[in-house]
Image 1 (cartoon, rainbow, N blue to C red):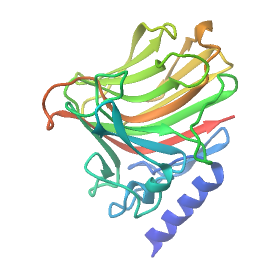
Image 2 (cartoon, rainbow, N blue to C red; image 1 turned 45 degrees about the vertical axis):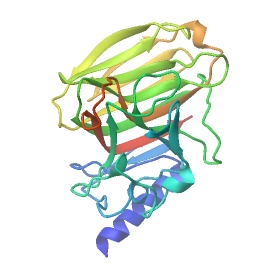
Image 3 (cartoon, one colour; image 1 turned 120 degrees about the horizontal axis):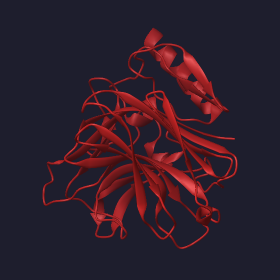
Image 4 (cartoon, rainbow, N blue to C red; image 1 turned 90 degrees about the vertical axis):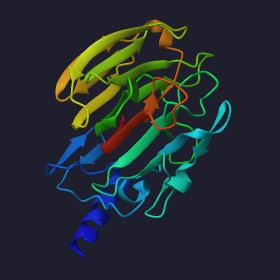
Length: 273
């Protein structure tokens, strides 16, 4: 009964603050980030429920590496929510530790503008409409995660361009490579071209954390395991609105359905102010 009470209390905190959270596996307490509370506690995740039973998935939509060519399957926020919410072999709760887990094989259905498969969350509004926020203000996404397996390279977090033009590029992508290197890719312009910045190294299977965000309309802020760096946003992006993405966006392809990238999340929050 005590475990269920603690989980209920955590769910209440997340609902009130408008964030998304799952407790990290090895700490206790809580921290306030802007107008969102990021709960961090001893293991409280229930490994017997769907991800929606441990996470507030009311601000996310899921894209999976299945469906018809050029049109991957998407799962709405309403289907993801709750202990009996959606899960399958590409998106599920790890029964050992309660982690929200994403699996993206080398071979899978892709979007028209990508050659790579993904099992990935796309930020939504509570109303069910697609998130599409201005660069002005402060916007952050925080995650605690581990890459369980990766063939070559996987994107675990993005800020992606929304409305405002014709570009389908991201503003930035955060990659994890099989070498353990964590690399930030910042887009040079909406037309393309990416500059890579190595920002850390963590062994495969080890837990780490990141915060990605923008502030002041012109600055990217990145923190990896407590180390923070900043990058200027080119003015060519000013016309575009943005949204967050997180999960396993595999960056290699082959004919294999058994090789790929598996990523487990223990914490994930978004905040806007």
